[in-house]
Length: 248
Image (tube, rainbow, N blue to C red):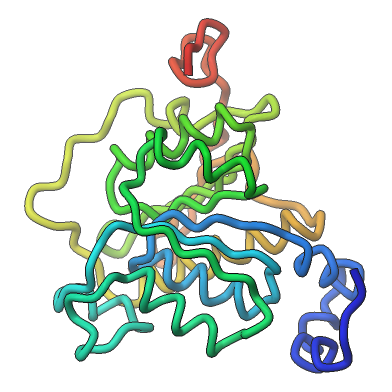
């Protein structure tokens, strides 16, 4: 898939990056990515992927914009409170890059709803705000054999992992016991999901272009302390999702 002269100009800084170039940009133009969640993480991921030239970009979220979202969900406006996030995000992304094919889905993020959608997307980005939705997404991705780029934030901490069903561990391998639900709401300073969302978008670009990724490890970022920790993930034989006796 060739690039037009306008595309060459739009992506000129990206084309100069080793490992991307014209071939990588053509791969991005031909790629299909689904972002699950349109909040602090998801809106950032979707914005950077649209700007990068992803040819087909889906994003799913059932929610309406609330006032408390606006400390970190910077692509929305105060006057839009009460409107569907996916509709607002679609309008923003269309202005950002009209060439990207946008597909908003306003639906609950469970494995049953995601299953038919995943058939037409190659990569899935986990931008959910709770582990119930993350585990549902993880299950759907491993059933459909789709790579999942996981991200989560809490306070000044963020975590990132690339989970490949082609022999690699899944999210349930990393978190065999469901973490207790957060009472009330998740505390988070506005810039933290911006940082993690940008990193998730970078992982998507690297995967599409064939560059080294975070596959098989969980990276934990202490943004307050400026430290990063890496945990090598291992596939668990008794994992209910990807283990030998899995029924996922």
